[in-house]
Structures are given as structure tokens and as C-alpha cells.
Image (cartoon, rainbow, N blue to C red; front, side, top):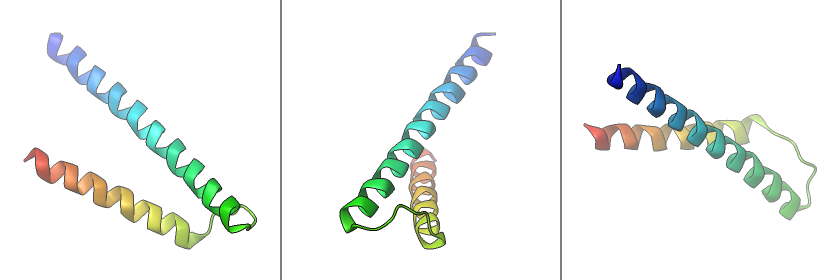
Length: 66
């Protein structure tokens, strides 16, 4: 039972960290558009850059854990 609780806590912590990263990414995208004086909009280019950055970060974390 203790192992199950430990896994649940890890999943909850991971979810909260992921949500915080997502909110931070959205905030930074908003501020960068505001700084450039452009209308706020999410383009495919921005989404793909952000997604590749997140995947790269996760991949490096996974590799360090091995």
C-alpha cells in the first residue's frame, strides 16, 4: 500500500509541475508578443518550437535517470 501511495504522490507532483510549466510557457508567449507589439496569437511555429523544447527537456531528464 505504501508503494501505491508513493506512486500517486509522484504522479500528482508531476502533474502540478507540468501545469506550472505550461502556465509559465503561456505567460512567456504572451509577454513576448506584447514586447514585440504584436497581436497575441499562437502560431504553429511557436507551438512547434515550444513542444520541441519541452520534449528535449523531458528527454534529457529521462536520460539522466538511467
